[in-house]
Length: 308
Image (tube, rainbow, N blue to C red; front, side, top):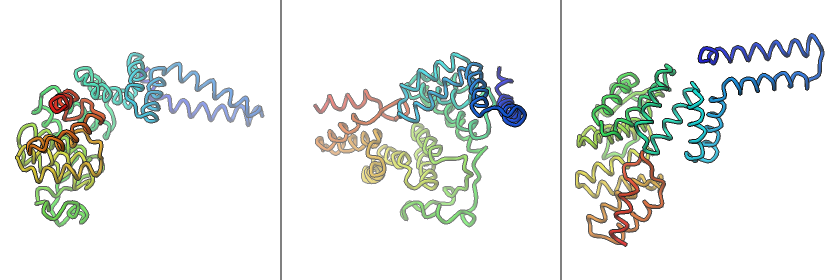
């Protein structure tokens, strides 16, 4: 079936062309007859590739409703029906990751990788596997995977060769040094640098955490998670002024960032401003929190209970 799937597009094109010639040109039949032939072929395709057909319903549901739970049942059924569509399998793995079903998610991603995805999909799947290692506590393995991805996709260049807009993407006081000046192709995203920066934060390698977070901002000056990274880094360094500045910038871009709201609460808690801390903890509780966040629902509930 996997071999048939790879050739089915060509089979479909040939079928549609031959049907058109036979029905409309040779036999001079009606358009409704041609459409009947086409409908029969589409029905056959759905039956032959039932898992993939159901999986695409999941993708449509997730796109339309932005609801992982509604899409989850379609992805799960598609996988049980042995779909080999990489997009569907990867989407299923990502939903499992958000649900904190890490061991199951990593197996799903490995399955997608075994199907030998194309260039960009290969990179995305490897990054998702790295995130699974992070959630399993294997920080070094996660960092190694990201560094390997960057080695494959990133190109470092001299300052003189770098587009001017990248140099101007940071505030003057955060003007990048030479090691921050990067040149990438479209396969490396700000989110990739942000995640690697956070992994280095977990390792308490604050220099590399700052470096990668700033690289993310060089690619996208309004990437709120990178600003959140910097806020958390400076919080750990006890530089609360710098932490607040970056966290507020993140919240101006996305007021519903659970992590930024939570760390703002922690800072005001340190400052003994309990009312302001409570305000941010309440805001955090109203945000969407899943396994990809750096804060858990339990963390927030403990704070709310403490200050109720």
